[in-house]
Length: 382
Image 1 (tube, rainbow, N blue to C red):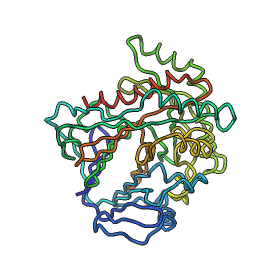
Image 2 (image 1 turned 90 degrees about the vertical axis):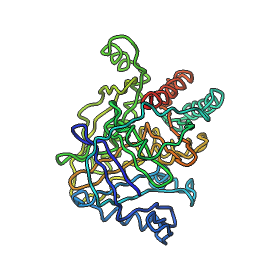
Image 3 (image 1 turned 45 degrees about the vertical axis):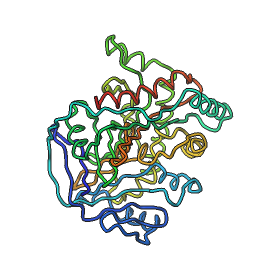
Image 4 (image 1 turned 180 degrees about the vertical axis):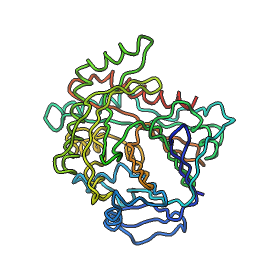
């Protein structure tokens, strides 16, 4: 049976089960996950459903929506890039709610490498994007790659769930959804939007440094003073500010342009932006303005998405998409970085990683940063 779990308050986890509605939405059809049948509901009808979900709806049953990265093509004048058989979203409405603090007998989940991006391949893509930057096509690209792993032993969804939610260093938007044969497992720290006390907040992350052995304050200072990292963050913060202004009619504020976020063995920096919420806003209005998040595309967003589609050799799918939890007065939406998609039967794990490319970037440094992000996920599991 399908279930979802989210990191919650006071070190507990919100566990949702017994779905009353669950489907995968495609461009021209919908696949019902409970009956197993297809329905003639297209993307336009799905968007109308999202338009009917107002921010002040306070749904009694929790609604979980996994937005696939490729759905963003429809919001960025790039629908021609979308294939008919690509999923746009997974929607599950649950009726059973609980709070769990699982225990696990597992000490680790050992992953072995199947395939990972090579230096030659990365260097060629980097050069292509560098030339595009020089030609003025964009200011920044977020280049990503898949890292494919496998486990020798079979792990049930309960095994993975209990082990994952006993980790001591889970991020703010950590969550897991079991879909029958597949699992979405995310340790994302990044917020596309959250609504709190009458304001909508967004917190784009841009700029990463591997944590060393020196004083943490000195390492943060080094990150904050790096011109390349600063330009990355400011470009994306400005993009998100424009997205929020489009939503709110120019009322976006930037309480913090730069703040540190330390997660496991990585140091990040992020910006905090906010705008007053209008009660008539629908979920569709918010998503169509903000999704996909600028930190995982680049700037300008439309140009970046189209160029990246030419150089990336895989479809991002869940990775770099977003996950929404809408329940009562709780409305959060993550950006799914630090995210793996798991095929339980084949014991395959696909994990995405990448980083921002600007004219100040060096290929070797960016390649190492991408590998550091993959290693951070492996460290969490071991």
